Amino acid sequence: MSSITHRKNNETYTFVTPAADSTIEKLNEFYWTNELEPHVLRRKAILAKHPEVKKLIGHEPLTKYLVLLVLATQLYCCYALRNTHPFSWRFILTAYAIGATANQNIFLAIHELSHNLLFRKPLHNKLFAVFVNFPIGIPYSASFQPYHQLHHKFLGDEYLDTDLPTRVEGFLFSNVLGKVFFTTCQILFYALRPMFVTQIKFTYIHLVNVVYQFGVDYLIVKYWGWYSMSYFIMSSFLAGSWHPCAGHFIAEHYVLNENNRQKSKTENNVNISKELLPEETYSYYGSLNHITWNVGYHNEHHDFPYIAWTKLPELNRIAKEFYDPLPKVNSWVGVIVWFILNDVNDLWNRVKRSGKQTNGSKVGGLDSN
Image (cartoon, rainbow, N blue to C red; front, top):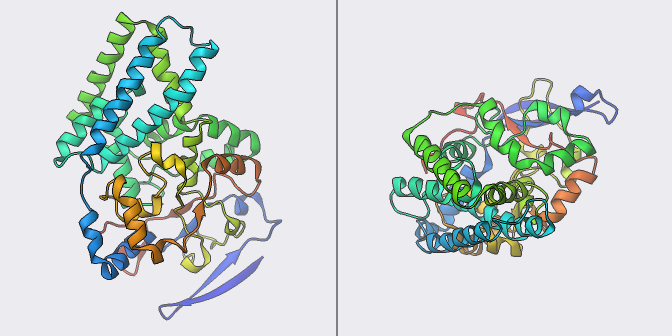
């Protein structure tokens, strides 16, 4: 076991790096840091150098019309398959190629709505999110927004960021078979994990979401049958499983470059120097952004959550010197395969913050912007 001494702000920290033959308890650990999440600092630096970026902030009216086209496509497929058995090749291929792609698009449209990027008024965004929820098959949109806001405001916080795997997941699913199961059923982990990590208040929007969704489900089953309803459910499951677009779930925040071999940490899970950690958010600039509302521009999105998808490439162009040096993901499909087959990639490869105070500031704390 070796140690590294680092000096910062006139204080000296010693970081212990486990040896390759360390016990499993030492090797199986998240990347703990007491540094503030990087996006607040980068946002301030970009605004200081490029104040014109502020002009990009705001909603995108075009989005709602494109979402309506996706909804119409899903509704047509749902109706067309009403007499087709769910275990037939025609049904499965349609659910995978069209349904999963469309529902992933709808998941990410709800993501845009959670940042109030389709309408000026927050209430209109919430209600439209409830409306577009119906092809997913279960009430999802009302809960997603508050949990996702916590993800942004408290990135990496062990109790508030429900995008992070739990320790149970880390222990159970970090071998090859476990990672196959995890990537196959990703959507279930994202749906169920939040309720075990932190709770949010049940509001009237949640009630509207539940009543509306089950009302639509009832009408579909009554008039078109269970096969049609199965199309929506299968589409949602496949959208978060072995689908090219599902690679973004892993690509966004898992530390999967060569630096993840360095599991530098202290004995008490605090005080990892930023210099000893790789970047914790990764962008992807490939063609799948065209059907996922540019969610691949993920560093840009976390830096400026209130810039709509159509303006993220422009943000990247303006602040190119800030984004070009950052590590990137070249393929969402490749990320899924690499995550499973490379033994150094597992569910422990996430940066976590303990929520302790650092120089008077709460780790992962709120920023006025």
